[in-house]
Image (cartoon, rainbow, N blue to C red):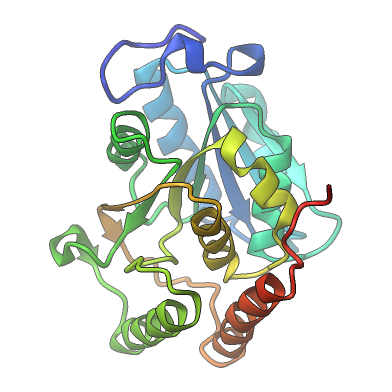
Length: 263
C-alpha cells in the first residue's frame, strides 16, 4: 500500500522513496524468538491502519534461537517485512548500520525488538522531524518522568544516569537520554554518518548523535511512553565498561580526524 494519508503527522507523497516506500522500520534482533512475532504484529497492524508505504527490516544478529526462522516464516503474511542477517553476532550498532544500508525509505525508524516504546509514539517523532525541521528525533525517558509507565530497576536507572553524565561531560551533548531505542531520522542526512560510524555495540547511539551534532544536524529530544522489558541484553559489568570506553573512543577518533570524509 503506497497511498499516504494527509494528516500532519504522516509522511507525504513527495517523501516517498524507492518502490513507494515512505518509511523504513529497522529492528535489530538477537535471540528474540519470544518477543519478535508480537512486536512485528503490533507494528504491522499500526502501519496497516495508517496505510503508509512502509517496510520492516529485522536484522538478525547471529541469533542461536529461532528468531530468524520465525521472521522468515511470517514474512509472506506481513507486508514489507524483510529479514536481514549478519553472518555472526556483531552487536546492536553493527546491526543498525546493516539495516540502515539495506533500507529504502527517506524516513527511518530505529526501534528495539521488545517495543518498550509503543509504535504509536512515532507520531510524536514525525511532528518533530516534519514540522520542526529536525534531522533526527529521539525518544526520551529523561524529559517527562510521567511517560515512563514501567520503570527500570534502581540499579539500572542509576547506571543510566551515571552513563549520561559521562556522555555529557566527554562529548558536550546536552541530550538527556541517548540510549532510548526509539529514533526517527532523515535517511539522506545520515548516510555519511552511518558510513563513518564505528561503534558496534550499545554506544552506537552516542556516536551517531555526536556526529550529527558535529555536522550541525538538528536533534529533537521528545518524551515518549516507555515500558521496561525485564529481558534486557545489557550486562551490568561487561557492557558498562565497554560503553564507557566506546564513548572515550568516539571523542578520540574525532580529535584524531578519523571521522573526516575523504576528499
